[in-house]
Amino acid sequence: MGFATDCIHAGQEPDPTTGAVAVPIYQTSTYVQQGIGQHKGYEYARTQNPTRRALEKNLAALEGGVDAYCYASGMAATNAVLSLIKGGQRVVVSDNVYGGTHRLFTKVLADYGVRFAFLEASDAAAFDRAAGEFQMLWIETPTNPLMKVCDIAALAEVAHRRGALLVVDNTFMSPFFQRPLALGADIVVHSTTKFLNGHSDSVGGVAVVKRTEHADWLRYVQNAAGAILSPFDSWLVLRGTKTLALRMPRHEENGRGVAAYLRAHRKVRKVYWPGFPDHPGHDVHKRQSSGFGSMISFDLGGRGAAEALLAKVKLCSLAESLGGVETLISHPATMTHAGYTQAERDALGIVDGMVRISVGCEDSEDLIADLERALQSV
Ligand SMILES: Cc1ncc(COP(=O)(O)O)c(C=O)c1O
Image (cartoon, rainbow, N blue to C red):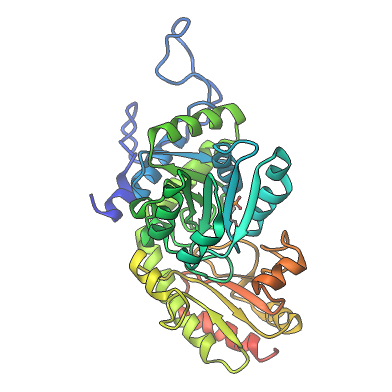
């Protein structure tokens, strides 16, 4: 089936009891048994829930995996995937991932003896020379918030030559634009909070896998650790993915317009958007993705200027998060990347004047008018 058809139908048979077209919210904690061990495949709702299962099948189809497991947040999905790694093993991470990922790795999991190294990964050959041995490579592409592009196929080869796994956080692109498993990645992670749900009304996460051994382990961890996605959140995300193929082109069209507007503005020093032909890694991104998305970062030259803009925007909401139909604007240094130290942010180039915008599905002229008015006070 085509992608849009899968968005609407994959994992979603009409309800066997009533024929309901929309998968019901199975809001139950447990399931009655006819006798000891005699049940319909459902024993307890942490372990199995039909609404969550429908979403998992849907997302597995969209990312082209053998299976998927949904968790209470993107971070819970990340944590579950890291349980494939044991104390003493080494994980290499592309160098400007989401601040929460950096925080989990350096402040929590490092204390369990997992070794982490953060490396520039946009040049796969240089990365290969510098990386040493590792058991897992964790990347985002484009990275958050600098939009550095990593070559998924080349890095899969680098990881696999070491017998390691490649995990891609595909939150920024969604499977509509980019399908890392087909490019060689072993596991894809999403914060479903973002484009997959698309409406800024649910927090969740998913890990999609290519191998049944990983599916078995992640299902086991989902039940053992219990950070499950609720039935209602599962239903919201299922509702969101139905329109993914409609929303993403609109996000991108608006993103393109806003990126071009910002780039032409005299008060904007630099715009980071992979769709610009002179953006580093543009050609790689074009080869491995079918679009450039609507995540844009730009530098206004100093914290005061960023604060002035963020205080004046009205239609663009100053908020953490991204990927909703409404445009969200944020300040990476104090919001999404506050988990990095000032020195780490300086080294990466996450400057205090940087603003990140997740362009929504409004009328682009309204967004540009809002930015135009706010930029006057910068
Ligand atoms: C790229 C990326 N990955 C993971 C996460 C974590 O997801 P959640 O907030 O659902 O835990 C985020 C959250 O902003 C993100 O932007």
